[in-house]
Length: 330
Ligand SMILES: Nc1ncnc2c1ncn2[C@@H]1O[C@H](COP(=O)(O)OP(=O)(O)OP(=O)(O)O)[C@@H](O)[C@H]1O
Ligand SMILES: [Mg+2]
Image 1 (cartoon, rainbow, N blue to C red):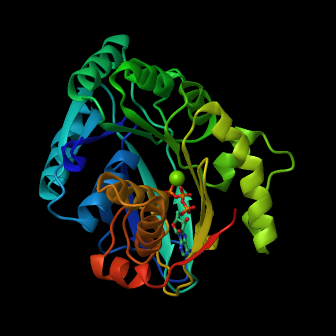
Image 2: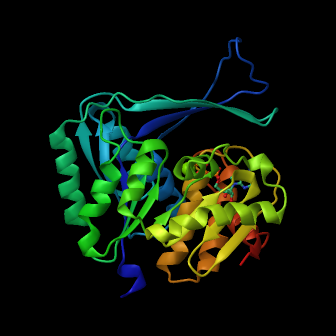
Image 3: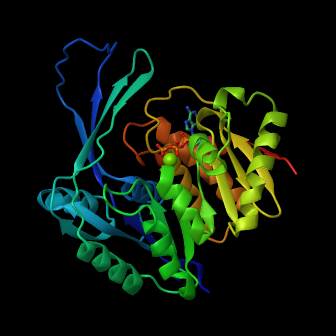
């Protein structure tokens, strides 16, 4: 199998128009005038694709398949074309949701306002998408099911998509949250990338493990031990991201813990998507899991240094690669 003949298909079910406002010393209850809000027509599949493009402008083996609100089709098409990302989006009735992010560069604080979404997806829309995925996905391709799912759509949708591709030996990747994640696991994805909140949801941990409780390497080992049970469900790669505390990579043969200490954190939205982009970029080049993990860490952290989900500078990635600290825990 030629590494670069494999294609990545990223599924975009619930796109969102991200409006990012930079407001110094932001406080609730005040009025602010913003000169230039930054507008990104995104969704996890897009942040992930932008990350791949920021690693390698010439990366072509990538396509986004999904939905977009009829009125916003041109906005998305223009944005994706500008970034050189191939796509096929099915226009649907209703408005695309819009998330607001307020970045306070003075207080180093970010406020998020998330909308649930207004899509009305008819059964025929979903069938159309599944047909499209089956047509586009070839043997050995990688499919990414990431992000939330539109209201009214069954939380089993990701497992339905992944199950439909089982016979084609497609590598399946799941990066979602809540019920969509829990139900998606039923299809035994090849790779999952939960953050700690999502891992708590999957393992039903009570009380949940918090990032602040991870102080020593022993705490990280205990966390990895808890997650090991997921390997028994047929998941081959478990990537647990821990925000500023780094990430764990868990496979049948390997437990890695890695992190990068840095200053200048600006915007952490999309760090997980960038992390996943980094991992899969090297995976497609058939690099070792250690090198996949190292690039993932560098891209995740680089994303936090630049505004915009999946937006980062290659030169930051290159210098962060040298700053990664990786411990082998097994
Ligand atoms: N403050 C930070 N400092 C350094 N690295 C960070 C920071 N935040 C995130 N990262 C890097 O990015 C990776 C992914 O971040 P995180 O765990 O926040 O993902 P996430 O919650 O899935 O994000 P999203 O869903 O918004 O993409 C981390 O494992 C880490 O390598
Ligand atoms: Mg995430």
